[in-house]
Length: 518
Image 1: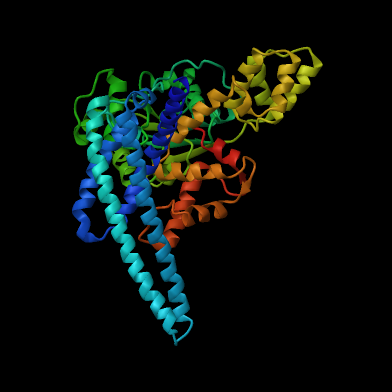
Image 2: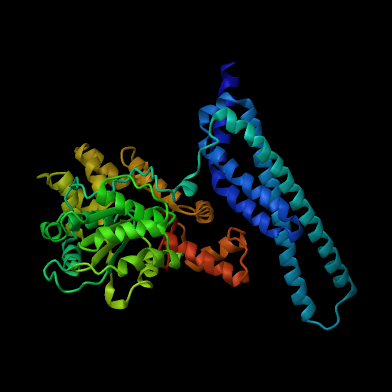
């Protein structure tokens, strides 16, 4: 009996893990399949798109306990998995026949006399391709039936009104846990004095009448490099606070960039009241009234959207037209250079600035470590600390986490153990680093998440180059079909790679993993 219960638990746990993967895969597979359907199946496309969002909402809300308690739900998840796999198989067949056609055309063009068996092969391939399209349509019709069955479980589990993070991120009511205030920093910031002074000079606090135009400064840096901490450090400077008074506005940028959301959050930050209007024009008019007679500093924290230039234009244009004393200043933090470039395109060259945060030097990282672990007179421990700092590659966040770990484990064996183990094997450190990775992973689009998952097939220290990896992504069918053909797909793959790493050259899987830190 106990053994049977254990087996049931293991199965439901496996299904739960599978459904978490499905949350990423489902959109990719269904959208790719819909792209391959002919125009006469437009009605099926419309119905599937509508039912897809509802099923995703249910999948997002299901818990492991609900799966264990509901055998019918377990059976539905297996049916769902089978339907997705059937659609994937049909897509694989179509991709194969597409490649076969290309090869046959090349062979045909290389000779004016095509052998009879080649003409027969072309005819067979065409018939097989038509059969695969029929299989794909049947698979999607089966998937539609599975979607219909999902409605029963939305009622039972109570998750019919849930939405996934991607679908909820554009609403004005945001449930983010990130603090959108300039609260006092919990720990000192080391090694960013030069960047702080550079930004304060750009703010013009020493020359208040210098410029009445809007100006933007982007802080760009990798995960854990302290972009938000630097912005907070600037905002807490006495000269900055005296200059801008109570018009330092801190807004966390939603993953899906929407001007109406940002403007509403700005108004809420200024007035401390809930915004009820939903029209962008009305909100921007209200915002203009608030800012027209004041200096203001707007901090846009953690921006991700780089593909919608017109949306950045909609947001920035009214702010550029405000003639305020000294104008306005926008401080933007982002880990993506492409986001900074998207904003730069909306600004005159003399009204845009970019500060790039690299790794801290050895002395600064040592200061962070010493802040959490007071300097020890023990020469051996000091020597170990030097080696630890050498291995951190200038990342202040990792230095902080490791410092807190070593503070509570001050004997020689623990420190030496740290040197001989990877961070992921240290129980007290790994969860905090992995939590950052998880949050950053969830910020990626479904397609980029699939590309990221693909990297798990490599050993942890396998070195690959961008061109090699992106070619694998394209050839494995992870990049959706583009109207521009293969060259367009390869460009999209490179954009996916750069959205994660921001760097070219030799990378290991761990480099790629750490590059996705927020």
